[in-house]
Image (cartoon, rainbow, N blue to C red; front, top):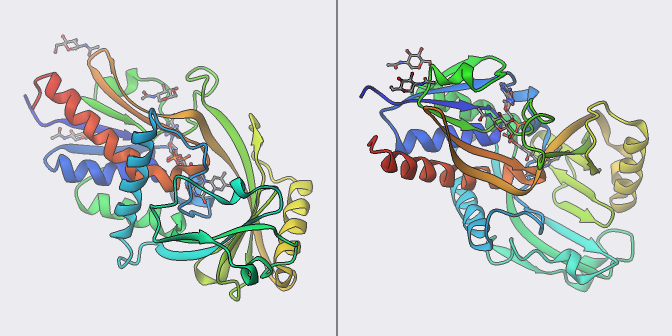
Length: 330
Ligand SMILES: Cc1cc2nc3c(=O)[nH]c(=O)nc-3n(C[C@H](O)[C@H](O)[C@H](O)COP(=O)(O)OP(=O)(O)OC[C@H]3O[C@@H](n4cnc5c(N)ncnc54)[C@H](O)[C@@H]3O)c2cc1C
Ligand SMILES: *[C@@H]1O[C@H](CO)[C@@H](O)[C@H](O)[C@H]1NC(C)=O
Ligand SMILES: *[C@@H]1O[C@H](CO)[C@@H](O)[C@H](O)[C@H]1NC(C)=O
Ligand SMILES: *[C@@H]1O[C@H](CO)[C@@H](O)[C@H](O)[C@H]1NC(C)=O
């Protein structure tokens, strides 16, 4: 048998972290990334990129979900000094409604600090907040991270093909294995009906004086990034496919964020961005045999793909090793 040909469908954060982990475990394979969108054209690009899973984030079991997150956090932590868009970040989450809303069982015990906010911290922002937490985590800015990861893959021998894939037949003749990291993909309506877009809109402003992130009720968030660029959010529209910016959403986001951090009133607006989160009730990382092709699915990360990508990538590569051993190919 010749060299194993592996295609990775997708060049978002999931496809690229999968590729880098494939390279570590299959250094002698021929790996090709196939995608119709790269870097700034992907959903991954617009995400603020904070490492913070929602409490509903879910893999096939609580243990696996936890392992994905631990593996992701470790993987990104090793890149902190590589100048690739990964940096430490800290801040607050506030609520007037419930203590539960400022807790996060997936982050507590994983990040270096996750503690209740002190009473002086509860009044850092106007709003009369009753509950709050302070935590430290990582920020992964895809604007820098995706080009870095793509370049790193290419410099290690990975080929890149810009192509829209309509059917598996197209891939069957060229590859032994395909990693399906296509996110919402193109076959949304024909393929996996559990995959649902959750539309999200953000505003990017320049406000270099904002040093911490702030989350509050009604899906309000303010996340500082590099170059003084701050992401203001957000919105969550289930089963909405609309990718145009909405003026009402923008006005509502601005109003909620300015109420939380009034100094944002003087920030310069850089632009508005809308993306569709590829939501699935459980993220799908699974092996499937299609004719002669081994497909490893890795999609459906919803609003937490930047957070969970390296962990699900490790799991996907592990599944592939297992599948190939079962087929006596190794
Ligand atoms: C407003 C907003 C804010 C967010 N903030 C955060 C955050 O702070 N932290 C966090 O963890 N997550 C965040 N997310 C979620 C995150 O952006 C997604 O979970 C993540 O980008 C999904 O990555 P992906 O690689 O699966 O998909 P994508 O980035 O969409 O990549 C999919 C890739 O597959 C390719 N592809 C698909 N179909 C085909 C086809 N048929 N042929 C060829 N190529 C194909 C595309 O070209 C693309 O390269 C946010 C999302 C939104 C919308
Ligand atoms: C590697 O993959 C590319 C893209 O599918 C293909 O053109 C090339 O022939 C492959 N090389 C080998 C040695 O199989
Ligand atoms: C990837 O998954 C999507 C969603 O289920 C599906 O529509 C598509 O056919 C899959 N692609 C491959 C190459 O398996
Ligand atoms: C699958 O592999 C077998 C044996 O190598 C070959 O005869 C057959 O044509 C292949 N099928 C497809 C769909 O490529």
